[in-house]
Image 1 (tube, rainbow over the protein chains, first blue to last red):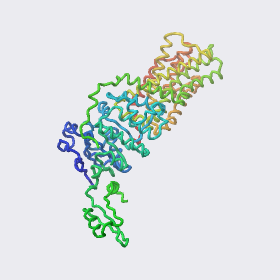
Image 2 (image 1 turned 90 degrees about the vertical axis):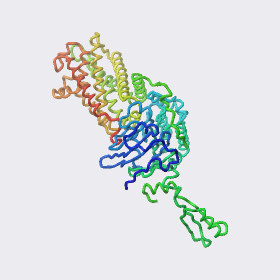
Image 3 (image 1 turned 30 degrees about the horizontal axis):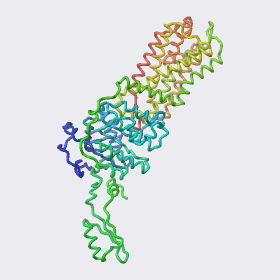
Image 4 (image 1 turned 30 degrees about the vertical axis):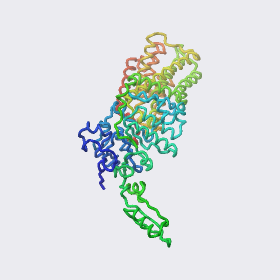
Length: 313
Length: 281
């Protein structure tokens, strides 16, 4: 199955960039204007094991883009190529107008990275670490402000080895945003968070996005992709199987609705229809008012996602 | 949810406040030193080991090695050299795999920090701890065992360059050997036997010329023997040079071998250093 991703524009309910579709290696300047990331035909294999099998992807500036997929789908490999950590085997990649395979300091200072699992500085305090990293960036934010922003103000003087898992993740985010990046990568940022910490984290991401930061996050939580992303790319088996706004994923809105009810004898009935309202009105007339056990459903995001990644329920 | 307007470019809006490259290396060095001093096991084992050793050895062997020269006078040279090797070679060979395994190095690589700043920070840490440790060792030996400090400027100069060359070679080799360890825990398994064997065959615990000739020849391939020999020229009378295997302290050859190990170490660092673990790509 060689599913090519449709143009990044399709399915997204956003304005269309004023650029013509770009082919590989062409008009980088124009791309740089509107696109934070442009990927064509990205491939990466480890030995004989293909991790990324031909990914095309565009991320516009100011967009929140979620890469959604099961473990081992190729999310981290893709993102780490974009971050300049891994070399690709083939394909054209432009991130903030430059090839991430050759990262220079100027480019690094415009990109913020929150890796999936990164080492802490056990013997140092939160404030010491954040202040130290602020020295690496030409336009660094105020360390105290950033610590406050990620919700670690009460822990600023604590050694990092005393932090909980969620607090360490916040420190990771603080180090990712201390340089005031134009583009922020977050690799499974909320794994291990409790529900409240996740909500707080989502607020932080929305703040950053509202301030104009382009955000690329990977996640295997559907609700996270739905809550944060302007567009979601579903990745499975090293391929992007679809890119769309969360509510349009898998043509969810156009999918047939399932209407189910019970007959007066108690027999369950169900029908799939493109016009559920008409059917319900018809049933109401037939039963003279309330329809017993009436439900109207469309496929949930989870339904379409699981279908896409090929895991039958 | 979010606006599609282009972000204001913060880089252009704010003037650069980033410290210069030299200042960055100093900050990195200060951070490394802070981390070192706060980690109790590194302080105890790296700083404390040579001092404990000299306390033990100088108490056991309180005689002379001929010519009225105290055993301590001979033994201090081995302890200084061992101390310098511990703080550079062993310290880095054990800690860098831990930092690599934890992802600390990978995190640094994701920042605009110039690569050499990280190495610079390690060198500053090694030099600072090395000086502090050597001073402490000398102070203990002078106070408790009547060590005679070098009497001439020329000897202090030799002390200086032998130490600098030796520490440089050991630092580079420590960084290089760190890439052999696959996991955080294997660092000390790789480094400790190497260091221990070198200490035994290089005349740290025994008078070098008492060792079997083949052992002396093996030791002569590695830096520690030459560091000890260079330091003996500083702490022992000139006449003792005649007892060395080469008939003198051979300072020219000391400089040559240590310099060669600096080059070997540097080449190994540049060709084999890894910022991430193997499984990490």
